Each structure stands twice: as structure tokens, then as C-alpha cells.
Length: 448
Image (cartoon, rainbow, N blue to C red; front, side, top):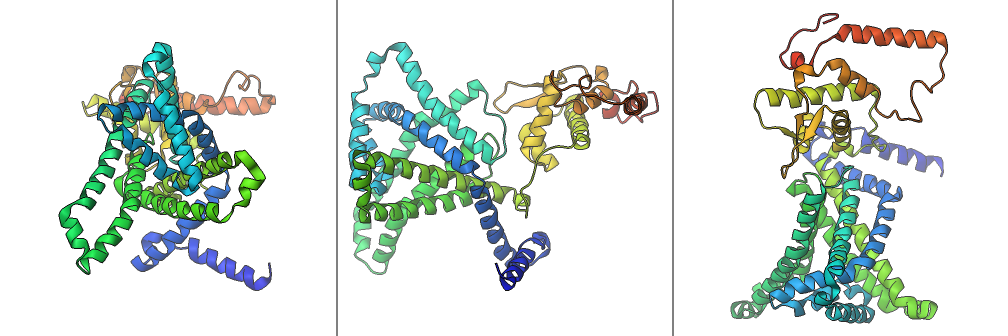
């Protein structure tokens, strides 16, 4: 790369990353923010993790498609509208062209031949487990995007997943049916022949598929991740993903129609190869939309270099004491217990480090989680018996295990003596000072 291009690139980087968006005009903010978003999302895409997770979801989808459709078919059959399942699947596979229609007929044939009554109890459990495992894999991928390390609890997982699996097909059919009903209404047909209203209605009819996909993706972004996603970020991510999905479907269909050579190369496997590629693109677009929603909700992650979320020992000690103080203070004053989402919002920190320290305190026997729909945290012991030095030691020793301990780490006598003196000084300063003393605002005196 020659010098003028390097200078141009350096100036572009300076313009893009040097300004604090809170200190610039609204126009500059509206220009810089989307460019930063594009650069960071592309960087995330080139990092490879989103690609790997999209490929993993393709594999899980292939295993779970027939069981998922079988459950949906059973639900829709109860409403007498099970015949509408085939058009919905055909619409999803439309970019595959005539091959998509062939796959649709084959899958629907498999689904119709499944006799739930013949499966028995074990077969029915396996059928539901396969469907739930797909949703669990999807949640895991979205949790990665939202930097959440833990899945929902087992009971919450089954109730939430099954509600989506059972209610989702009904809502989807209702949306499609409502659209068809409105389109065929006599008043609408009359207005179509009136200009310019007719032209506007035709344009609106072309936009309806986009709007339905955007609404579906927005719902997924709000519901699936195990964290609180606000409506506006989810809607922005759903809009980006919906437009990309519909546009890529049109481009993919054009590619299939104009490239007949793939059949000559792959022969009978051509239809499978096309299906795998389209599923991969669909999942990748869905994950990219979720990534956009994440950056809209947390714009401070739009940085020149990727943000590392590894806590230093100093930060871990401070965060552990801060979280224990907040939870104990609410408990002592009979306030509503803190939830993970509330703690994250109050502290203005990412969920991952906050949850890591909470889990550390929980494993150490200082915190307990409630079994409510929204999991909250309470002190597990009387806070008058919890010494601050115990929390300090637990935060400092995080990450140690049976293969890596202080005893196994070699050190010279002078180093050991210095560190022991520092440790004695810290414990001597904290003494018997308890978490209750901290909550009550009692001043710390040496050797308390």
C-alpha cells in the first residue's frame, strides 16, 4: 500500500475513532455511529465466532426441522389450520427455486407420516427434547452475542421454549391469515383501482413480507437472549436483519436460477448443498442482526480495538465488595432484592463480569438465588457473620484450582516473606470488620 493511501487510511481512522460521540453535533453523530457500527460488525464477522455458531446452528437445524414441524403441525391441527404449514415453509425455502418446493413437499410428507400416538412415551419425550435442544442452541448463540455466559434455568428453559414452540406457529399463521384477509377485503380491492391510493397499496403489499420478517426477528431478539433487550435496539437489529434476509433471498434465488452448473458438479447432492448454504446465510444474518442490536443498546462497545472483559484482581475485589454491599443493604432495609439485570443497569457494566463475580460469591457460600421468574440475589448467611476479609480472600483467590495453587507455585523466601507481610497487613487492617458494619456505615479502624 503506497504512502498516500496509508495517509488517507490514517486520517479516516482518526476521524472515525477520535471523537467522543457525546461531544459532537447530532449530524456528525448520525454519520459516525453507523460507520463505526459497520466497521465493528465486520470485525466481529471476520473474527470467525459468528461463522462457527451459524454453522453449528445449520447442523442442529437439520436434525431438528422435522420434529419441530411435527410439534407445530400438531398445534396447528388442533386449530384446523395445519394445511397452512406448507406455504410458510415454502416461503422460507423460496430462494432455492424449484428445489425449494421439492424439499418442502418432502419435509411435509415426513411430518404428516409421523404418528405421535405410535411413538410412545419415550419417543414423545425424545421428540420434545430434540425441539428444545434446537432452541437451547439458538439461545446459546444469542447469549454469546450479548456476552451472557449462562443459560436459563432448566424449569424456565422448558416453559419458555415450549411456549414459543406452541404459541409461535399460531401467531405466525394469524399474522399471515390477517394479511391475506385484509388484502382480499372488498374495500381494499376497490381502493386498489383508485390512483394514487392503488399504487400505495401495491407498494404496501410488497413491503408486508419485509414487515413480517422484521417483526419476527425483533421478537426473537427480545425473547431469546437470557438478558433484558430493549425494544428500540431489537427493532433496529430486526430491521437490518430483515432487510438483509429478504434481499439475500432474492439474490440467492437469482444465483440458483442463473447457475445451472452446480447440478452438474454435485449431481444428486446439489439440492442438499444449496439447502446448507441457504440455512447458513439465514443464521448468519440472524446473528448479525443480534450483534447490531447489542451495539445499539451498548454503544460504548464501539471501540477501535475489541473490548476485553477480563477483570483484574483489583477490579474483581472492588466489584465483589460493591455487589455484596448493594445486596446486603437492600436486604437489611427490606427493599426488593437485586436481580442481575438491575445490577448491570445500575452499575453500567457488561453482564459478563457482573455475573462472574456473583457466581463466585454464590459458590463461596455468601449469596443465594431466589426461584422466582426473575432470579434475584439474597445473602446466604447473616451479614453480621460475614467478614469483609473473607470476601477479599475469595475475590483474590478466584481462578485457583487443584493444579494451580499458592503451594504449587515456586517462590524465593524473600518473595514469600514480602507477600506474607502484605497479606498480614491487609487482614490486620480489616480485622473482624463485617458486611453489616459496612452496610451500617461503621468506620473501619485498624484491627477492628
